[in-house]
Image (cartoon, rainbow, N blue to C red; front, side):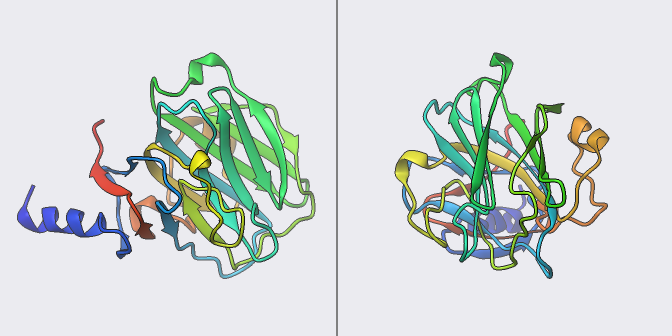
Length: 224
């Protein structure tokens, strides 16, 4: 690696460093449980969200509950929450309401990266939840709700208040990458192929990510 690239990687790994850059070929490593280590995302949200699609990849050997993505507003601490409560159960929150999905054993963590996508439409309340390119049965949640633009969005922790009240027993330990969010519903073919295309333009874009590292989170090259 060239010296300039090495120093850029070291800088981006510093806690509290603000950055907006492409993270292609890199991952966030969450080395240990904590109440103060996470990645704060800065989404571009000019309008309230009536629908969205959020996708990410993660790798962990945790068997306890952990949070992947937490979005809180001043009204709801769980505007959006992706939580894995056991090796085979995901909990999904939108607008403060929740539902659960049971996945088969072939997605058991600790064996490979998992690729998940969550899509939601306010008009119908229909949730689409995809795991490794496979769609789970559609369910309904928070029909008519609208997500505000004052979201505090973080990776690796569950906010129990607006931007705070973090619980070590829900903190993520492992690796996370390819985090995206769109203010629209992606077509099923794109979710099935797990392709993170740039059209439409994401409001959270791994290849042009606006983020801030808090606590002990390290940006590392991927081992893939």
